[in-house]
Image (cartoon, rainbow, N blue to C red; front, side):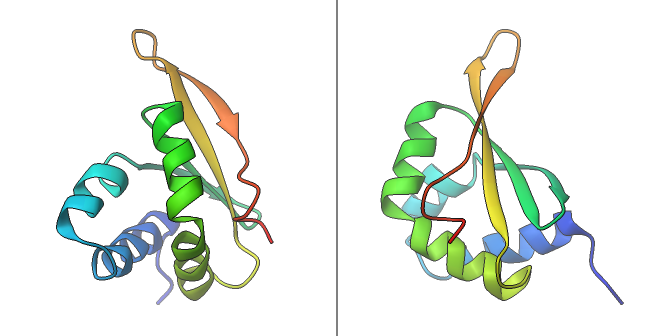
Length: 100
């Protein structure tokens, strides 16, 4: 039985949770929201540019390994960064390291 992309993302979060401290998980990974999975690209939403940059700087390797393990090799990760919290407007970001 094939799992939905959202369930696969939840499986990724479970693996990540086992590889970081509880504080790191709560701070950096709990705010990530699944948005969609299309054509090998996983789209997630993060609450700020700071969170996006921190994830890219400190966790891009872990994210890539877990995505490849759960979704398959070559899975790309894109972020929608909340730019306007009042209107929930986002800016799309494609990380440099998560697509190679």
